[in-house]
Image (cartoon, rainbow, N blue to C red; front, top):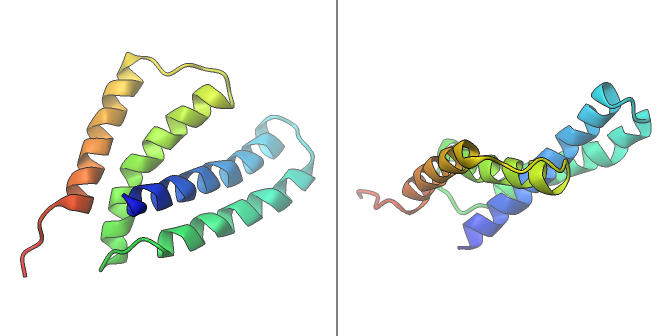
Amino acid sequence: MAAVLTYALAAFAEIGGCFAFWAWLRLDKSPLWLLPGMVSLALFAWALTRVDAEFAGRAYAAYGGIYILASLAWMWGVEGSRPDRWDGIGAALCITGALVILLGPRGG
């Protein structure tokens, strides 16, 4: 469960950092948005190293499902666009995949 919370922190940090660039380039916000955006992206990278996984690739693969769910939450909470049923179905499939990667038994 700690891995899921760490992934959630990483996801919102990544989305926040990328959104700062989106706001600057697509929403005509001040370039000053880039400063917290870069800090947020550094937090994202740091958080992913906190996940207890033997291989970086596996940690990143599991992260993908969490990132998708967090992206839809961002879209709804920050951008004001409620996800539709297809968003929900896709997120459920991705979360299932992430949990299989995280919790699947590993042969020794």
